[in-house]
Image 1 (cartoon, rainbow, N blue to C red):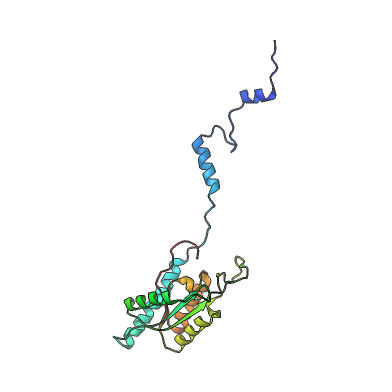
Image 2 (cartoon, one colour):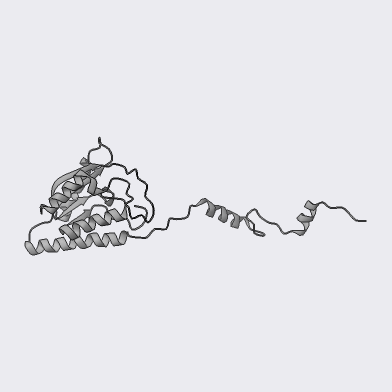
Length: 202
């Protein structure tokens, strides 16, 4: 006598166990690993330019040091101090102390101090557009930075000292343009208290 079986019974008997992820007989470890993989965002692919930026910046510093040594053996490099503050009420006093200490340790003579208030950029940056994608107004549109460039152009300093590259620009292209402008056009350099990151977003 034939027994009637439901479709569900036939599937349960004849099919191997299939997990929700679509593969046969997955172990709990495989499932946990797959779930973990889906939870983690994929790392952003971006060209590593920090090494290039460090080398470029250090090259112009070496050249400035060599020129200074040729002119006078005991003359020290003169630097201006620059800081970017996040609001009008913020004062860069703590930055000045840090920059002064760093300048003394490096044997620089620190001159005038300039700062700007960070103004967020409201434009959208499209990949491959060639436009800068910095978080704040580019340095060449800031009055304090313009004054730094004017004094360097006039020969009153061989460089500028800042806390980190983000005081100039977080965008690699903008930052590189500033390094090259100072180095190639004015034979000046940028000194950072905190060097560029070797990895991570800028």
